[in-house]
Image (cartoon, rainbow, N blue to C red):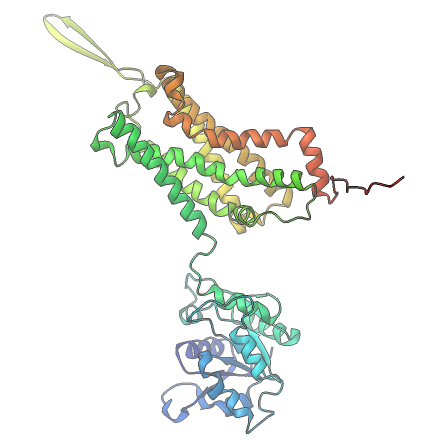
Length: 453
């Protein structure tokens, strides 16, 4: 675009002046339109009437609220029908009161309907005035551009890049419905995973309190803060890890039952599959917290079976008593549990890091799938081994009957089921059929009508 091109801004609020500052620094000529231009004195920018601003500018930023579109913009068409002819209008508005339904028109679509001879482009609605003025703001600096007019859309994409923003084409103006709703959403993809995580943590916390504090009294109230919390985090982490990999097993079951990939999964399974990344990151956070708490509590007082008992030798030399204390080294159980825990945390770190888009983009599809799928199963296997190494002596001590509802064994039922299904679907009898289904073949033969002799 020509740097000396005049760009108009309708609206003299915070966003309007932030846009003017950014455009001015990028070398553009800025004209601002206001309903009361005479009252806007003392600024470095030329402020004129809205009609004059539109006349002089081929590209106009609409930095006013949608409820003012009629009186500030559309009302002028009656007196000057060609005012907006081939003008590019950049709609910055968002939904303020309620979310749009799929059949509701966005602000940008309503503006395009009201001014059909203009080229309405939806863009810059996800950038605040602070991010517009500051080069160090921590907000996203990506601009998503939507329009039904490809030429106008390309110009705005170029303009956004010249303003030092990343810009992306997201399709037709109908995409504005999604763009306007996004700014009103609070972590929409994280709500269900967070609720499920809190439910899992609550269930294991209640069960641990009942078993360790209420029923057996093996833990005093002084250890409720770290010790009980650490056991809760351990059981919750392995449960959450199984939640990450269970939906792929269920997807295999449905595909085998359908015999084709053309049929859609149930809605609950589809949402579960789409939220695996969020579940995985929450699992990593829980496991990391468990590792930190374990390091804090790593003493013979808390993990007595992890260390050899301290021996005190008393000897008398020349009528003097001498105490010789031999330090308690870690037992095989303690070293094995620690090793498996470290390997599990290391693998989970790799899974979490590769889920970051900047890192995942460096991998090809096969590499990314190998890490997230194969390494993920190895991580689940290591986590199960870590729990078994910790709890096996306890299972032997309490007997078979009590071991079934022991905390260490109870938290393994769901992960073991997940792992068993994974191994089962790797068998040739299932994997070959799944491979054929995913290649588009229909493995269920249609029923042939019986012929009447």
